[in-house]
Length: 383
Image 1 (cartoon, rainbow, N blue to C red):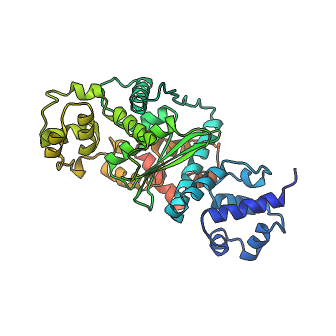
Image 2 (cartoon, helix red, strand yellow):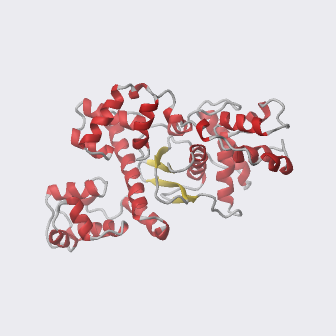
Image 3 (cartoon, one colour):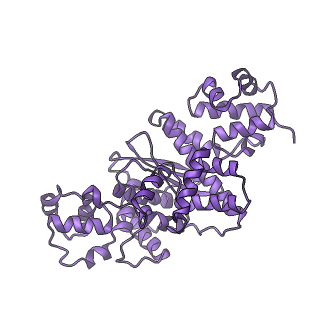
């Protein structure tokens, strides 16, 4: 089928506009002359195969998007997101979101190569109109699915959510006001991006909150963006997502199993916040909501905080300080241990080329050497 130059050129223009970048920017980054880009965007000339691959790599998307004459694609999800939140998303944050979607596409591709079975997406159908009950019931159902006992502390929430079919990526965003993003991606699933710039315990609440949105509110290709400390207190969907997050992280059964659970001081509050891997304010809210303490008791110890040194990232457990330092630079790009291993395994098995692996990992040649050295230190057995 011949390439429809009008459709191709329209995609080029729309992609460039998504990121608010100039032709000069594209030319410098791709090595394609500006005059040539003008001709391509105007549908005057047909692109070469190399140009399509270069442009697709630059925009972090499947090259098939550009050679297909289909007009409706998953690309429009980001277009809708950027249009809806245009003034609140910087160019760098737009790239970060696009790259996380690209990682989801690549992981889906790798699983297809090995015919790996996909985890079944957790599905919950709420009954009735009591939104808080929806949140509590869904949290209980999901904990049951991943075989967490009612009063069991969750150790690695990211791994658990991934097992339930959610595509979780942690990525440092430029805007400190954005906590998370949830996108329903056609044919792939629910993509959740958590701002890696947030406090480690806060990230756990954010990912749980976004999973709540993915379960209840993220249907038919919808998208949602959450802000740190900025939400409508009368929005029932936000209330439900918050209740889900709190009930998943700190279920009533756990609170009821705490010895002498109606008497609290600062030391006890910090101790149990560390065990539950939540900030003290989240634990106090859960205690109040369960009726174990009242507002006066909560206010008396609300100034106690978990020391930063006690907040251990669950994806760094059992790793040496050297590995934590080196891996953190990859994690903040959205690269998980499991994804790294999938890419390296596929390259080692000859399923993908080294250059393709570099594209999938968003890295350059020198960074590949660093990643390989991490795995030689035993990273492949760390999860």
